[in-house]
Length: 353
Length: 224
Image (cartoon, rainbow over all chains, first blue to last red; front, side, top):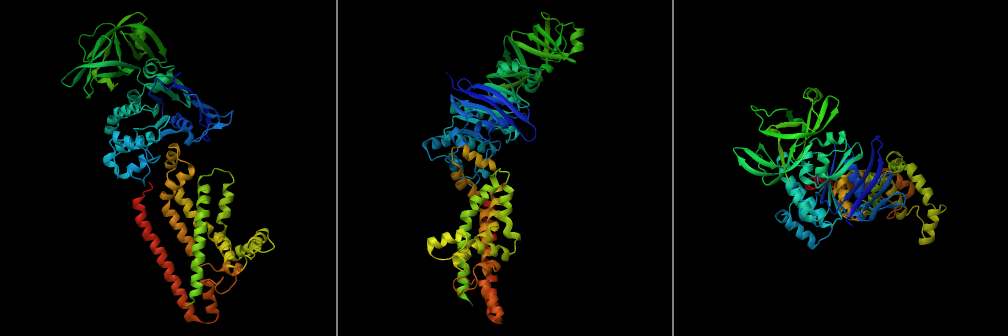
């Protein structure tokens, strides 16, 4: 059986906030699990409960069959016994110790030396954390955590302390480092692009509760409810491949369609992210339109949500569109209708796989 | 100059400071990190010597260590000696009297250390005691140094408690401040002036050194 993380925890804060998390993650299948949700939804609290830095009011936590916490049996392992590599938002490097001493903090070991090499920290070994860049600090923190041979890595908004340019660069590097480490990781983020770039599995947290968990594309494609859909924001996350590049535009093959988008330097296999609001619908193929992408598809369902209508199209792959209820009425949209979906090139965003 | 009294005061101050560091660091740790509801009571007790007249403190210490008290009786049985009017008795009183001067700066130093550094250490599998030694104490050195210096200086200058608990026995309990008082009572202003000047110079030098040292420590261990 694949090692699983099973967590059922309740925690009430003096502020009135209540966390009630029910979560199962197949750590064996998912190298990186993204814990996603708006700020204030309780993601960091859940991470602290997992690490043993705070104790739940009730519930149980077990990882890979080993019980970490069980209120009813009076079990509560100390953080030292759980051995989770916890990466704090600002990395919490020991400021009075050099980079090398930080990495070797758990023990002077061959493992620590190997990690220093692998993470390119050897040239920085003698520097203090205050004298290196944010991206380098992140690598030190990750190497320090991995040197202690953790069962699970917990990362709290690992990219938020970086500036925008470094954040984009580090996304893929972080994903690579996490996957190569072989240690399952749970990453907290509220940035949907970051979630798609980092995770295999995703748990969506809203107002202290896990609302949905599953493979990341499933969650984006089939939000369990409107609140999840709203928090994940991007309704369309499609696997695609870049096949051409011409005068600042990329051509991406998605299913049997070719989409054009602005060249942001990506290449190879990508996820194509399109917000449902950016997909406009028309009955006929518009012959004169500035929009670059026109796809034909069949309406699978029309769901009214107050003033808006959520239209699910089948273009060989599912494509969500949100139009006003008024337009949906005027166009008399019915399941089975053949339609044309129009998307501007600037509305197609890519993130690397 | 009464070198005997000066030497006695230095011995008393050094011993008091060392004992206070051993007691004060764990106590400050508890005060900084405990979430017990009755913590405020402990804080109030620790701070009492700041507001209590030294004579009142001395009076109670005298009762507590006297031969009729359990503590005094136990001490007499173990050592065959008595605590009141002895150097050891003076040491007990000094430790209590200077307790807040160690605990408060050290607790402030501990509180200034980012708690997440301690949590990071625990998650790395390092015990609370080792984390205390390897992370908290090194980062709180300025607070600990301030606590030690203040306790030393405070003990060097204490008068009322010494008089109540120790009396005025040359070489045993006559500290430098008692000696100065004696000299003034005997109208020996020249000797009193010499000893006072020496104490003034010593206090100033110690404090100046501390502040100079802290200047060098701060930039090396930025706490923010």
